[in-house]
Amino acid sequence: MPKSFPIKKQGFHPFADLIGFTFTQVDDESSVCFLEPDERLFNPHGVVHGGVLYAMADTGMGAALYPHLRQDQLCATVEINIVYFTPVTSGPLTCRTKLIHKGKRIALLESEIMHQDRPAAKAAGIYSIFTPRKP
Image (spheres, helix red, strand yellow):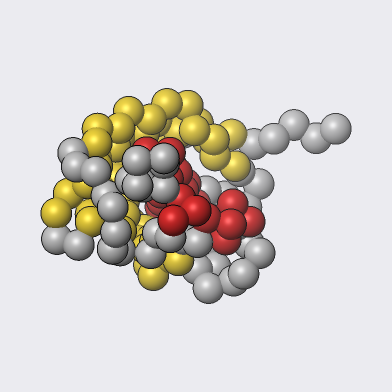
């Protein structure tokens, strides 16, 4: 039985709540999350910190993989490569993630982060799929 990702449930993903991500879609093929950055997320140069875009990709990838996990499984980031295209100084960000491949232990996902109608960053991530050991 696959897991469900409750996109509207406050407290389900505390880090996403802290940063201000809002998920608008999580299904068997993809996830979409949205962020309206405020100045707390800017670096000293008035640009949204690159770690925020990275966190959007990482969180979006985990969400897109989540429905493919069994109830007893978890996933964890192994590696993410990200390319930043343009500085973001205002306005909404949307991260669209799709599952490219899922094996028994490894999954590959891609995220594209858009600033309005322009690409701000693109990322590819490898995730481990595992069943935690019982203590």
